[in-house]
Length: 385
Ligand SMILES: [Zn+2]
Image (cartoon, rainbow, N blue to C red; front, top):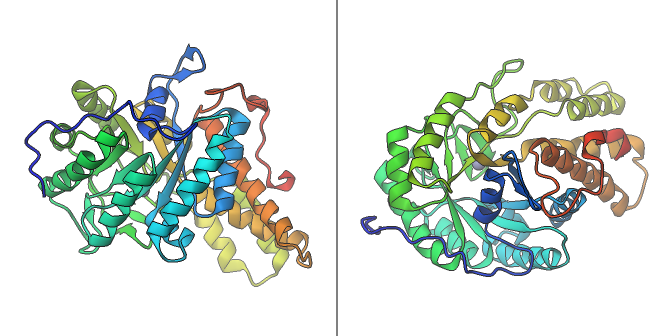
């Protein structure tokens, strides 16, 4: 592990990515400054959509281009394995080429991001190295040793993360670090039974020694569809978020905070899914209860975070829920339709609408051009997608 004594390398802003692609830091910094078109206003956020299929990438592009949004496509290790039929490095090659072609024809600017890359294990290192070559942004999540199921000591987290910064910043690829441990399960590679808040004194040391410009501090968000007991509200530590922002801005006011586990529960999706399960038969009581029990983070909490400099909000669960609800709806509408494309469209039109809803909520519209729809009149209704 390299000793983080010398000043960390600065992000190379001269790097030119393929057409209409930028580092995640460039797009999120624009959001922190509230820059859209020629105007500057209130800060907004980039929802990072975890895409796991090519149709998901297409849906995200359609949503961005409908609204003129800044786009952020996130790929987890397990998504890359899925794209690459088990080989995450092949997956990386395939998705980066695919996104590059889509972006070249796009009306907006997008970033591609490795979600929860780690530099601790051998396989994680290879994916991070591949992502530095093929994506515009990487997350170096070294706060938890997932193989050993324990938090990494601060010095080790700093050391591993600094190695990624040393490799990525000179070629213009922005790096997101993680400090503190986030509870919950994102996918089979990223889960934790415990959580610890980020300590302000650790934050200063971490930022200075790693040089990261994007950071996921831990302030009470959780991964997964069950962020607490059913009926309970998730309470984020917004005062701590503001305290951490002050520390970060005093070191470099271009530092962007990232909220993981920022999925909200879409009531219209839950009730639509419950209706479809009811139509599908009387034996679905347990599944209906599972849908009713999903606990997301309330949007007013996430808005509090955006105000505290969290300009990248990771949202995955509500889009997965939308996909499944639309699948249930497709089956109840017509279970004898022998046409893969019809089902495909049913699900992905719904997910596109789910993406549009979140982009509007986050204020991320009219950035690269005026929206093609009236954002104030947009209604998310799975009966009409
Ligand atoms: Zn995460």
